[in-house]
Length: 161
Image (cartoon, rainbow, N blue to C red; front, side, top):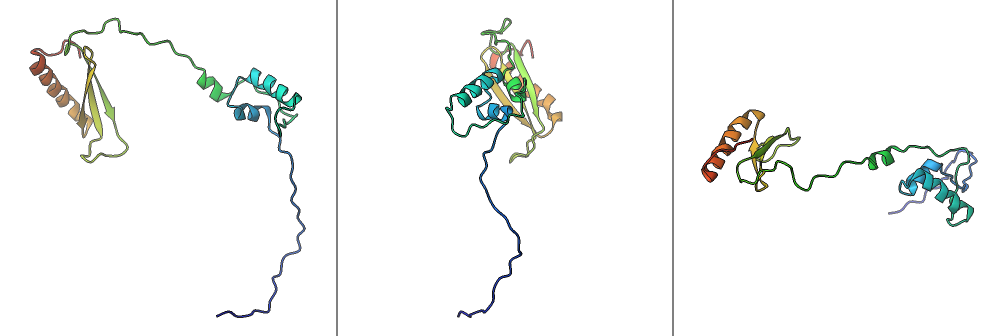
């Protein structure tokens, strides 16, 4: 059922207007918008784009200056030495050299409530075994278990671990 209501809304007497303005970006903002290209290239490329009117809406804030450093660019350009193709003292005999690492504490528990794991990597065959731990105190017993498995499989314990 509908009812007719004899009323009118009271609006406060405020004058307002909306207008479109051209939004300008700083040199650094354009640097980020162009995907962090080199600062020097970015400035030259941006100047070229602006002078040749190659991009619609390319407005640069004249009060800004391009910065010489960008954290993202610095981190992305960090170099590292190349990895060796083959280790100098790599074992060729399976079970002779075992590398191990304990990882944890996991932020969430697994179904078995495991919070850590210990990994064993055989340097000779690059085979990795992972054993789960409920606490770090179990690491020593897991190492003994793994050494027993290696001894049973190859007839002798690992030389290096």
